Length: 161
Image (cartoon, rainbow, N blue to C red; front, side, top):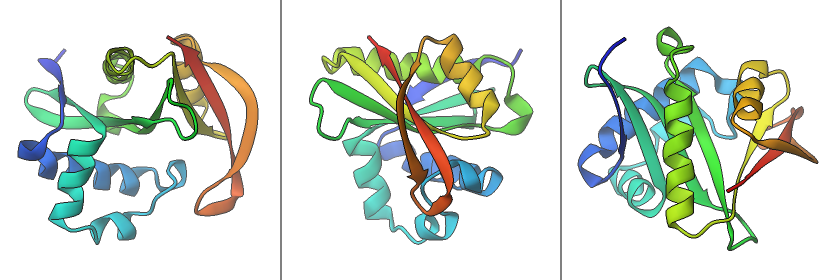
């Protein structure tokens, strides 16, 4: 396997985070609540704000960023954190890189004093569902239309830290 590392994105590598995020939105447009066109239009100041305000983690294989996940505060729950934007380059899937990204987010959430880490998974994304279940996330029973595509539903999952 390639030399792998997970790093927290910051001001210095915000362009790298932006590039991976745009690749994710191109590869799996139906899996996210955002659209590539929207995020392509964001200026440098907004990307700087994003990576310095929230917890963006990059996974690199042989020095190249091939995956991304972001942690944000859980809306209406000070003791919770929320995983968003999880994605790994298709050629690198099945190698445990998603596990490393989730582990980095879990460690971040614990350092923040969070008691839970939650996420939404789109119906039909069985690979992601299997990953999250294997890592201990459990369905909460909450469902909602995917923001940006009300024809698609998603389910909330939560992990007790």
